[in-house]
Image (spheres, rainbow, N blue to C red):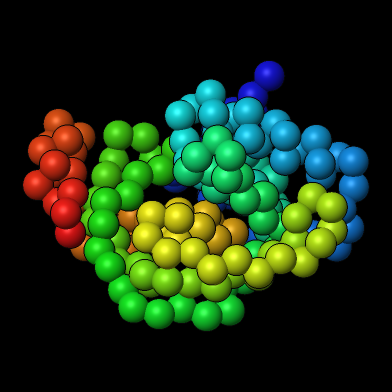
Length: 163
């Protein structure tokens, strides 16, 4: 059964989250349940604070074969910038443009305890930055340049698909 998603303005979404000190069976089960929750809610990313867990844990999965389970993630390099539309499971029906780094390198631990370094660009880069922001109590609405009405979203996306 999936976790319930915390909704803004729940204060737990605004706090700094604790680093994970040990990868336990409970943490691995939490990762599985977080993924289930993300899929059920048709998301591409989810962070532990969104399910009420004060931990630096996040998942991003743009395609089924490419899931990033990030424990204690840190962006160690970034380059360029781009503006695109974002939304959030914790802020349903709200969308807006946000400026983010184009290319990032992120270092994190996986569920096996292995330290990984991933270079991400485009939409993957954006999704990872969005989830890492959650781990520091930052919501995408804190960075919105322009809000886009839900009914205008499809037209906006079509007009900007070649950007």
